[in-house]
Image: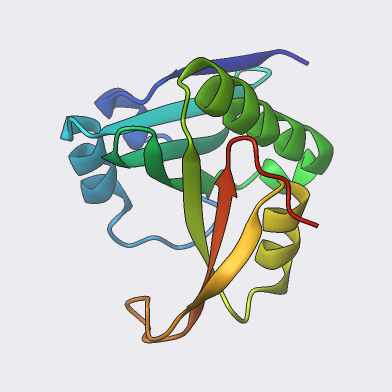
Length: 149
């Protein structure tokens, strides 16, 4: 299987098959592409979109990580995790010298918590009424060089 990474372009937005309903997807992606403090990557597996992964840089070496899965991502669970882990550990921590990445998981989304732990992230706490839905979200973080039990 061939993996291809590239910076997301406007021409990719209209054809990306989001796994979940995302009403502001197009405007959010255009905004993210235009922001100077963000990197937005399109990840393809065998020339088919697998995910869009982004980092919002909060300060040097620290960023909010986010990901939008493509509708076919469930067909490749092992590859999805391996590719995500390689981008985080190899590209962001090793090459870009990030010191901290963090992301949020809706408290009721059990699979999201499992996924965060598989990727080596540690739950730091709960952000109450964090999302647009006013639900609680768990904050997960990974810090370069620190391993949690």
